[in-house]
Length: 77
Image 1 (spheres, rainbow, N blue to C red):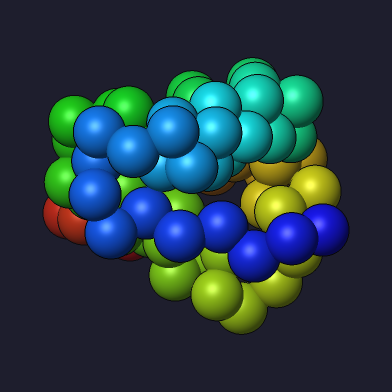
Image 2 (tube, rainbow, N blue to C red; image 1 turned 180 degrees about the horizontal axis):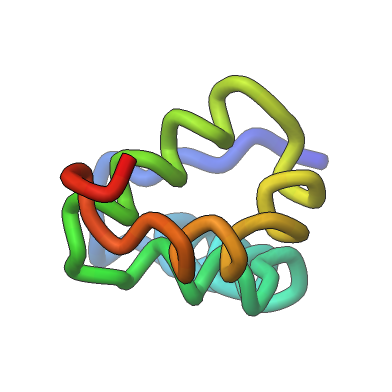
């Protein structure tokens, strides 16, 4: 793949770069990612980020709903 440059947002190469990034995201983002990434609950987002640092996404995805059903806030831990 050729390196793309995006120093000028109006340039054709920048447009190609943006289109490729958006296409990659559409193909590679999971429903799980969308589920936690856009959650405005800082507790859930922080815990999920920590879990994702420590283990693989698929492992976190398996326990996500059960964990937050039991631990709804920091006070519950």
